[in-house]
Length: 267
Image (cartoon, rainbow, N blue to C red; front, side):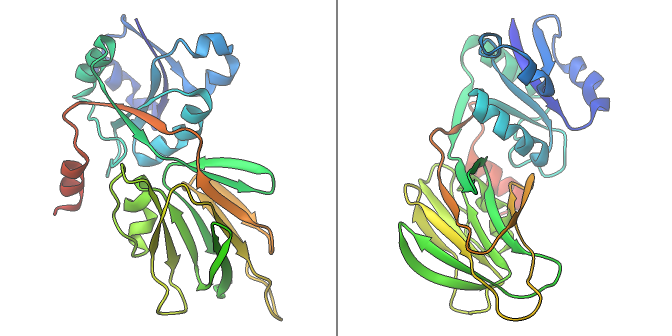
């Protein structure tokens, strides 16, 4: 008997999901119930089943990290880069999981600390200016060394998995998810010589919003995986480093990142 927590983008799709699986051999529990169960029961579950698009998948990441459960991404959305399994392929994947033959991917997570709160991100932490549209100044330190001050619209610190998300839209490189690096990508930098650059993922990066001059201050936000939005205060360090453990994803053995990349981007 397989046991999954599930997160569904649209509850109206649940009957469609049950048509594809043998519900007599699978226990499904809504993900929002996970905190109500004792730890000894949570560890008996096989994974978190995510049915939706990439946004739904990202919502499940903190739960998977906290409870050390792998994720299964089933694409019921549009783009579906993270949710790489189709609904038609789901029964086959469930059989492989039951037989212990499913492929396990491990994805590096970003640990972000701000004002004694810690978060994890699968894609990125993006520091962005607010509605006034004024240039902001971000001090960038890598491994304790002040590298530069970035004037512009903000900065993205991205994982390899997130390199195809906001990072790519801002002009950053595509990075294979097995690469052990992070990428720092300025957003519309006011200096033309500031370009995205890649650092080893065992380096700690610190970003500090500099004090402004006279006039009304710009409101600055930290957006984590498009899910968590924090207001950033001046002179309060944002710390980015590799999370202690990776995210585990269960998928089909034949799934290949390069093939998915080529298909999604029409290369």
